Length: 602
Picture 1 (tube, rainbow, N blue to C red):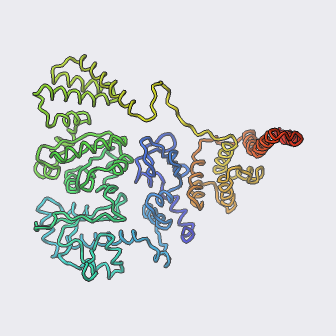
Picture 2: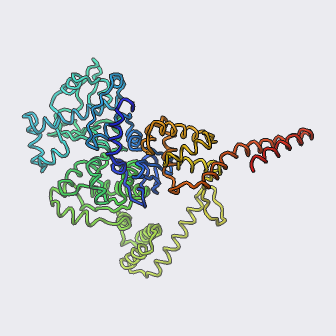
Picture 3: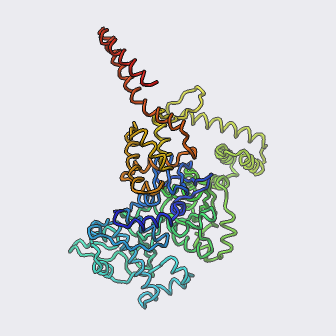
């Protein structure tokens, strides 16, 4: 598909859109030296191994091997074709993109793309109905009376679904959308009796739900008036484009504010998010009314480390906050918990007390994880009872034992000592005993344990000398065209690793077409993702600016003698087999062949 777009358009996109800006929309990047590092979006990790080079305009993950340029990043992460990725990057760079989709491309357009297109169309139509028509006036007045401003209604693209059974179904069908696909998208429902379709959302205020990139993938519709047997909120079902466990409400709007503030505030529902934005908190997101999932936590961690959880004050909210804290901590987040007064959710609190009090008394007064744990552990406990009090102290000591910083441990031990008038030395001694007990239990529970103290074994992938020589040569070839042709004259493509041979063949062709060294441009022309990953990895290698003649000779010699070494090893095995068979004449002949081969190594 790439060759249908003029090369000059692709080149303009590549030179106008910085890969750091592209990837920063998805990954929190921090500069280290000349490159940027972050958590890889293609596999779960807690230590950054994903590197982005602004000089070379490529990325590579040293954990999973993913690599490429801006185009391949967008294609891989969002599941787009090259044309779709080019169009998205062109929009980001404000570059005119007039490439027309070929007829057979349109026929083969993915159902998911049509589903998103339908959601985007309905979002605009619902919003138009709410703000511009008499049919939406009651819904508009309801929102204004509830404290929504026109600015907020426009920002969140809130809309209104008509009180009609078939308007949307006919609306979409007339515009060429397949009814069966629209049913799978969750927008319409098939009647059992005659297999006709009716609208899922009717007479409801419509809140669009977007994916991480801002594409509309679902809706949540709220009734204007309570109707018996009807849910107050009706949400889209899960579909191929809408997965609750991977969706975070308002993320696409909040991500720039999250990175600017280096912090995110996490809510349970979208009503809380909208209220918080009205209250001046733009770095807010929410789960889709469900418990936080590990997938959502990993998305959050890729973008920010510091998280404030702000859930409801009821028992269910406290339990949910406790579970969410554990999940976020496990993926490497630093978590604080904003504690709501009893009986309030964030939306209600902001409406009653206002934005300033919410900021100061709730968000800015968030508890550390340990302080929240202490509150959580004392719930439903009668601390006047000696037995329950001692159990509480023991539970807190277990939590303190998990803290890695000595200052934190000392702080909470002193707090415990002061509250219960216990000797600090006694608490420290018991805390250490708890630590030893828990550590021993953990060691006993671990598989394949033994009681011998050993240093941890770090597995390192040590490559053979010939393979390292080939990698360094290709790294220099990617950087310098003259070096590439010098190596071609000396080696004639005699690389021992098959992938290396394939890569240099594409590189020679790239240079012979008149291109200058450009890892991003070269990667774009590679037909396989495995070659793209290899090219990005080698281009990211740390090498000297110049390849000396001595180093070049050493690398080439190491590469050329490898086949002879393999042949010698094979002959040695044949000689040993001949001796085992007592065929000494054959063994002597093979020994002479081995000597001749060894002479070629000198």
